[in-house]
Length: 66
Image (cartoon, rainbow, N blue to C red; front, side, top):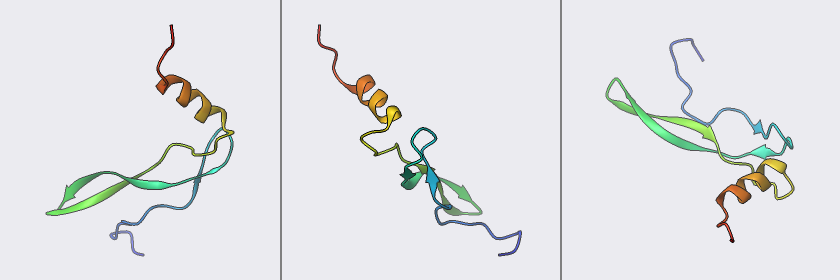
């Protein structure tokens, strides 16, 4: 690929910084370049049920019981 071409497919495999479990990639948004919408890829949240970051996220999103 030359330097003037742009990659529009998802980048290589990313891993969770906490548990090193592979992360899925999805299109987060699109931007317009020369009249064409180009996808902007980003990592999805970690899906590993044993990951500390996933557990913290679940606690933040769970309803608080008083």
